[in-house]
Image (cartoon, rainbow over all chains, first blue to last red; front, side, top):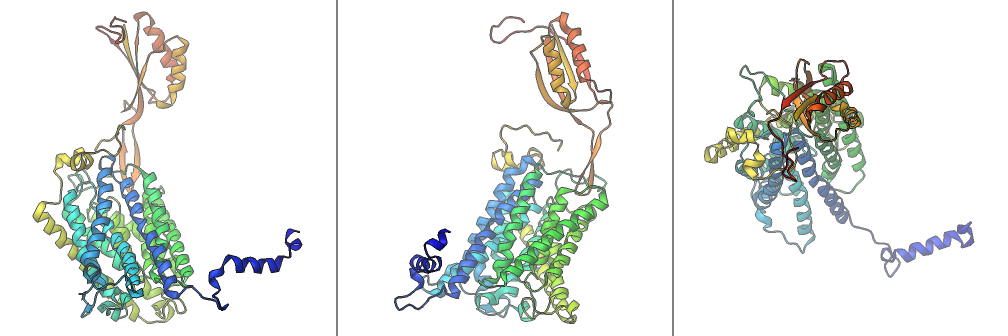
Length: 453
Length: 108
């Protein structure tokens, strides 16, 4: 009624013209937001969302640790992002994305040298740096969960600095150097694909975490004298559950943002990411339910993350059905991996970081060689679509090499720090709790804990 | 004056308080405790590992009562806290050497 009375269509046109004068230049020609501006906008939004993963990891790890160590977990999560950011600025970005030396390491762009903020290229450099910085922070923070509850804070600061400065950027160079146009890494030259970082980010974090957990050793009371594993329950599964949802949300920035381009592929990547997460949850929950008779919550939450990590390498190249299957398998795998690492290898990993990020990162990378579908993403074709075993072999090679680099690198880092200042707190301090002994603070002042360990 | 220490199930507290109030006994304190008598524990599952939990959540109720009210108070607690199943708890009655009200400095 109202619309008809005031002559709707012509009013709409007038309003459109009046409300958006900048879209119409003086001579009436339309101007558009440039592709570069669109890319910047999208990459920045995604990067900010990925930064929020720090909050997700903090909550997950804190909830799965004991209350007496909560402050220590919080501080470790802050420190690894801070140390990571600083190291990535000073040297990490240069090693990873600088002028490639033979495809192995970069050698330009240390501390933003050569970047001119007044040029479009310079401005894109800052955007790209910021995006890559939060990815580095993600890899670094994976380690803190596996070494929680018994690691010296000062030692953890040093290991974070070294991992962010060197271990992460070098393997990252091999896979992603071309993203910055300064050359190509040797692995990507072979056709290795890791779209958003199942291996580059997650498996590196996971294998360094394994090295750390091995070097630091298990928590007191984790293993009986005869080697049988004991449960050390986390103090707040509410934090863990919220943390996983936050990570799930932020993963859309992680995977979709890896296009660093504002284009139509974002939707498919988000769909693949979400389906894998859901399937991962189902896979893990079903597996632990059948195995033990109860749907364990922390295992189920790990399943979500397993699915997300698993699909991260191929989220651009697989079909939604492929993503679903990859997620489902990752969820099943993570349960068996946690049980194996905990009870057979007897490596104490309080949060399952090695299984979620290392094992499923490796697995997800391999899956690209099977599930890469024609018509989706790049023209990579996996074994299941008639692409032959070539892609699978390259994926296996790359996953192994990156994994080996990260594990050995992690061993070196932790052993060096152990030799210099030691990595473990004293037993009496571990019993008292790191909050009081390392930080002189309680997370839950005024609360009485009921605990037997 | 005697001190009655009663270990009861947490969920019977409202009924026990009501019963004590009905006998005009209002002074008491409650503590959360973990304990067990002959009640077996249960197992919890955490990430695929079983843990034996044989210290169960209970409440410790403490009341200081004049000698003549001890039997009455014990009976009231028993009646209201009893479910008939193992784990109902116990009552201990302890002799007090002396008492003093902090506000006035006089014995109670």
